[in-house]
Image (cartoon, rainbow, N blue to C red; front, top):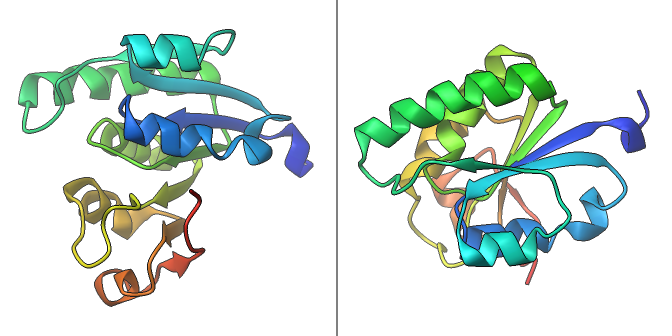
Length: 154
């Protein structure tokens, strides 16, 4: 399979996390892709014309929505069968990463730009299973020793 023919799942909360993923457009624009994010105005306008699955929110410390998003992840990932799942958080990424890993997808997590010395909860949850864990600050390699520092994508 050539790098152009891979199917990519971009999963994350709306707002800054979605913006972060959208900025990777030079990477994903020529690939088959789909998005998983909150059904909010910023997501609908940014992803106009893109294929996207709405997920459940709020996600922070919300067990009910974690369970609902886990079932959504099973359903969506079974249907779509992505080769690669990319996320910059937040909590909605965790069920998609764990289910995706079990289904053989490669996982890339990008720790958010505003974290330069402490991990996020989602980062800590997915770090052990990611294929590539990317940070944007050299200091974050103290927190995530196996991470790759690619610098800022902003």
